[in-house]
Image (cartoon, rainbow, N blue to C red; front, side, top):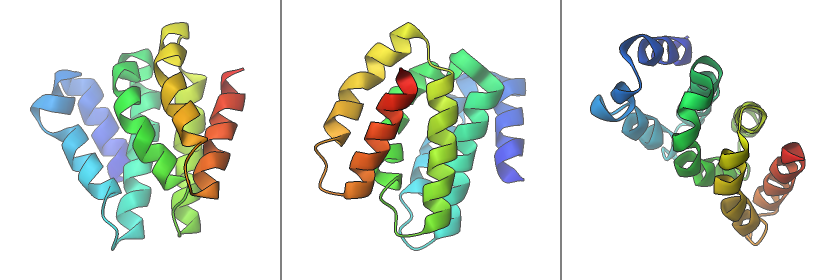
Length: 130
């Protein structure tokens, strides 16, 4: 529910609200909340819906959220990992050629991560780009 509301509000108010109203900072704080799997899952759903509602307008933010996605692939909670996969697939599906060039270095770094799920997520995302 809340993710739909946030995405709708950002689309209605405009892209400036992502920074101006602290939307991205709030979502980042939720995704970094180690105590609440629901918060992390909700933050990932927000990313997915922002991409869905805003499309390529959200692309400049993808580079900032990609490291958070890669870490979320290694989350202990299955529902968070599933939300991460959904968000990642939606993001990769909407990337332009320029967006692919921007995210490629972060994905290659993800292949060097210690967590096997992060490596797996990076490989999945690289595959989704082809």
